[in-house]
Image (cartoon, rainbow, N blue to C red):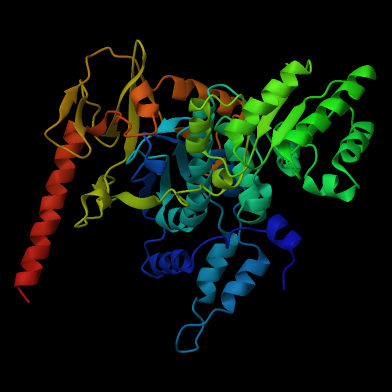
Length: 496
């Protein structure tokens, strides 16, 4: 039985679904393991009913890929797996291949902190199909979750209108890695600090926190508890005032705040964690101001999300700092992004690319074939439009966008329009191309990227659809492949 330390410090090559290993085994048995392939990681709908997502998790995913190895214990475990006939699931020759394998993949990805939209590739993996298959699950679990939380954080920060948002969700997170990943992603998405000290150590994220209700309950009365905390940490006093009676708690905080001031220290503020936050904040603000504590902040917590923060803002609640936990680190109303990883092309014997696509009765689930890249065009006021195009075909002289959901809507991008290709090299031949930007750079990029979006795309209720589509030639080739696949399916059905 492994310990927690073994899991997090040892090999993570088995952080995958079994069917990835069985498919890879099938490629090996069929002599196709080295077939050059291209996979794309995309998502189908923007989360939270919003108009965009915020790409996150690349550095974590890159860490995983850089360290990807099947160690002896991994191979030994795989050797114990049995099929339904009781025989070993995998040949020893295949396990030897895994044991000696080193990734030789080319990986291109959207930089962390980039706004992204449905059906755009966030990650492109190119290389031997056996290897590309084995990294699917880890890429999805990392990028899906961190993108989801970063997007939620960006929405909460948008609702807060410049007020600091603190991520307080570790105790409600989905396990240890869920808590760490969420703290990282929330910071990239715009949160000013976290309560998670381990995340602060790992990534240099500012940490914040003072005391909880247990501190107040330990003492005979609330006033004594505040005094004792002020004695212990006079430079870190935000008093939690709602343990017994919130308004009396504010009065007690004022009393201790005056005592702190007499000793040359300053009360930072108070925290409200229950009740009618709008009315309590108004009363507390009046009491603090009249007592000479106009600079004391009011911190609010209590199952907040972007909608509650926005509502409190509309009500005029004088809250200056927002502590957001459960509904941020778990995704709240949407627990998963729903990203997918699809095969899009393979190299044939003549060296050409053969496009591959998944066909479905649900249009949203039809994948896009080719070696895809996203080109983002910029206008004088920010992001203008995104066009997904196929690098395995000659770059068009002019880009004509075909709407991803309505092929009758087309838009030509004028020649000379400034642009940025979003997928950039991360790994080449299995080696990291260069150091990845840290979370502080990603956070700054996120701020710039979101600011460049039209306001109508950022709004919560019925956001405007940002223009995203396929390059016209790619759209036509995709349509032809869909029609061909459906025709072949009909012929097969009629022949039975």
